[in-house]
Length: 92
Image (tube, rainbow, N blue to C red):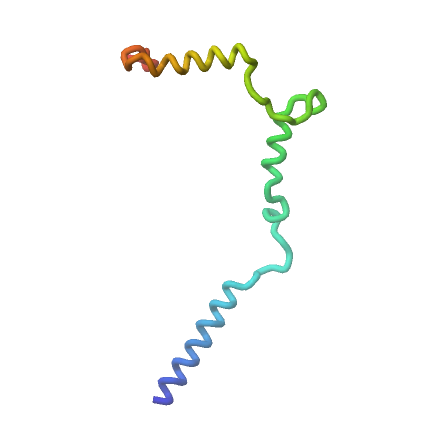
């Protein structure tokens, strides 16, 4: 009985040391990926701005009144028409 407990205890210590060794931090310094995390997204967003000095980076707030009204009327009209009113955009 004591021998079985000793073997179980030794195996438990070995398993815990493997788990601790694999879960530990492997290097003291950060990798290049961690140092530059998110930089590619920032560069892509910045490169899409043609002239940053022109108007800042504020988003467009909406359509002008007349255009928005026309789009809204066209959208509401689609609910009053049946499915036969829609044209197929696929080539047959």
